[in-house]
Image 1 (cartoon, helix red, strand yellow):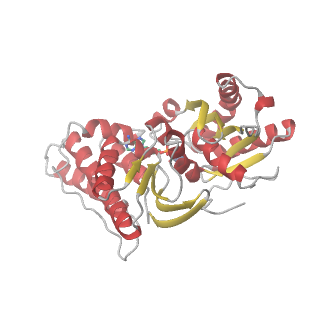
Image 2: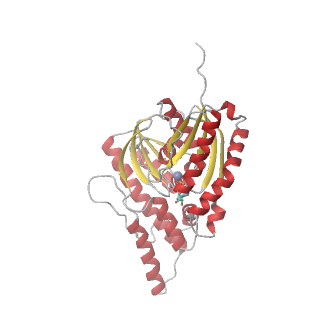
Image 3: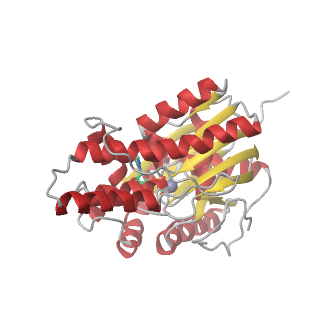
Length: 343
Ligand code: KG4
Ligand code: ZN
């Protein structure tokens, strides 16, 4: 029997502040993964400025795609499918990637697949864990989302819990700004926290009422701000390292609390994490320990595949392609796209 032809996907991601393109073969084999970060641009403003993000995407996108093809030693003629993030995200930023993908699809007659950004984060786990297959539990912790989901099959998700207010990454970013670390907050808090005492300040661990798996982080962020204000008023020295370490520990405790509950109640034996905050080593170690206690296998992408990238979009696009779910040339950006929602 002849070997089935491999599926070569060119993936594009521009939902927030990274312009990214990748070539992924058969969903798990990354041939190139190019990311043009806008961190330097947004740092001066202390956060992502949507208008500037869109303008930077339009400037960089062709260059990033060319580089992705070159590194994969391919041309458009070798590409079988174009995958693009169409939501959720910043509308102007998403439109750049979507318009680019549609132009390539139209000019080259290559089928187009629209990818949900969060689904991309989940699928980042397939790239380095070739044996990982649904069903499994996945905690997605990014700048805009905090979701605990049961991945029932490729492209089939049951949302067990989500944040009721701020996302975990958003809380990291806001606290980092409050203690003078600046943008992007997560990696800076992680670095400073290594020198601090996680038990120094007892920030609250909010548990959302009910028997679900929802999260809340805004109270924790307010508690940090109140603590900083009261220190200033009482002229007590603020130890940045201890604030960072204690806050990080509080976030981790809340995340692993729900993760552990889900492992107990669903009896699933596979648990994955995804999204920018999943690159936090302290969170990874804590999650790994919980999984070991429950006899579950633990999966996490490398840090470069946790934060926004196009390789993960290529992985997700592959399973959409296998399911025959293609987008038309009327594909639009959907800034509030819900996980599991289809075109
Ligand atoms: O997934 P991502 O790159 O973009 C979104 O889809 O939102 O996540 C970015 C978020 C930011 O809030 C950033 O502060 C956080 O992930 N983050 C981290 C770390 N690296 C990135 N949070 C905690 N520790 C880190 N090492
Ligand atoms: Zn993301």
